[in-house]
Length: 466
Ligand code: BES
Ligand code: ZN
Image (cartoon, rainbow, N blue to C red; front, side, top):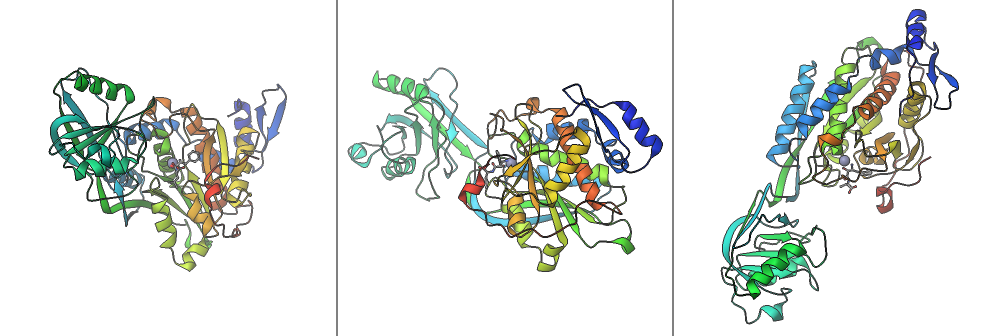
C-alpha cells in the first residue's frame, strides 16, 4: 500500500520541474527514502480520482453482467457512453460463441411450505414454468422410478449416487414436469448437468435442510404443490461484445507505430454483481482513458473492455485472433486489470503467464517503486484476459490483489467491499507505467516481443510470487 507522502516533495518536484527530481517518502521503519518521482508521473496522478472509479463500479455492479444477456448489453452501452463522454471514438466488436447462458430468474414455491425457498439452478438447466404435485423420488435412479407415476409431477430428489443429469433425465423420462434436487450435505449445491440436452426438464437445487422439511411433510401425508420457474436459460449461439476506445498518437510525425492495450473484462458470473470481478478493472480502465485522453503521446493506446471472459476468455481471444499479423506485431504491451479493488484481498501483484518479468512488469515495477517506494512483486498466473496476449507473444501481465477476497464469484462481490485506496493505488501504478511507455522521449525499457507462451492447465493457477 501507499506510503505516506510528504507534500514538500511534490512542491520541490514542481518547482524544479526536471525529470528525476527527488520525491521523498517516509517508510514505515521511520527512515526516509528518496525515490525519483518523475514530473510526467504527476501529469497522470494529479488527475486520477478514485471517486470516479468507485462510482462507475457502483453503477456497473447493480446487477450481474453475464455474457450474452441484456445486462451485458446494458453494461456495454454504459461503457461506450463513458468513453464517448471523454471524447473517444468507440468501436463495439461483437462476437459469437456457442454456449450456455444461465437464467436471470430462478423461482420455486411450494404450497404448504412456510417460508421462502432459495433455489439455485444447475448449469445447462432449461428454462420453463411448470407446476404440479410434489412427489419424493428418492435418489432418482431408474429402478426407483420404475413403478412411480411422475406424469405432470414435480420430482423431489436427493443428491447422491448418480449424476444430477441422470436424475433429471430419469425423472423426465417418467413424465415429470420439473425436478428439485436437495443436497445431502450442508451448504449450497453448486451443480452442473454437464452438457446441454433437449430431454431435460427445468431443475433447481435446494439445501439439505429445505429438502428434509419438504420430505417430512410428504411423509406425514401432506399434499404439496410445487411451481418451478426458470427464465433466460438457453444453450446455443450467443453474442457478446468487446468495447474499444482508441487514443491515436498526438503527432503523426512522431508516431512509434506501436500499440498499448489497457483492458479489463466487463462480464461477470451469474448471481454475482461482480463489483471487484471485474467492474473494478473496467472502471479503472475508464478512469485511465479519461486521464490519458489529453496527454501528449507517441504511441497508440487502446482501452478495451472484454466480454465473455468468465466463459473462457472468449472476448480477449477473439480480439487477439482478429488482429492481423502486422497488427499483432504493433501491440507491445497488455495491461490486464482484473479484481483490483477489494478491501478484503491481499496486496497488488503482477502475474505473467510464464512467471517471467516482461515489459509490462518492468514498467509497473518501476512506477510502483517511484510511487510507493517498493516495486510491486510479480509471479506466475493465467485465468484472465492477458493469456491470449501472452500466447501471441505480446508482453502482458495481470494486475490483481493476492490472495483473493472470499467473495470471489459470490453474491457478496458487491460495492460495499470496494476500497477507494486500492483503486487509487492501482490506477496510479498502471497510469504512470502506461504513460512512461507512451509519452514522447520515453526513456523506459525498450519494447521487445515476448516468447509465445502456451497456457497449460496448471498455468491457470497462481504460482509463488517473487
Ligand atoms: N478474475 C478471475 C481470475 C482470477 C481469480 C485470477 C482469482 C486469480 C485469482 C477471472 O474472472 C476468472 O474467474 N477466471 C476463470 C478462468 C477463466 C478461463 C474462465 C477462473 O479462474 O475460474
Ligand atoms: Zn475476473
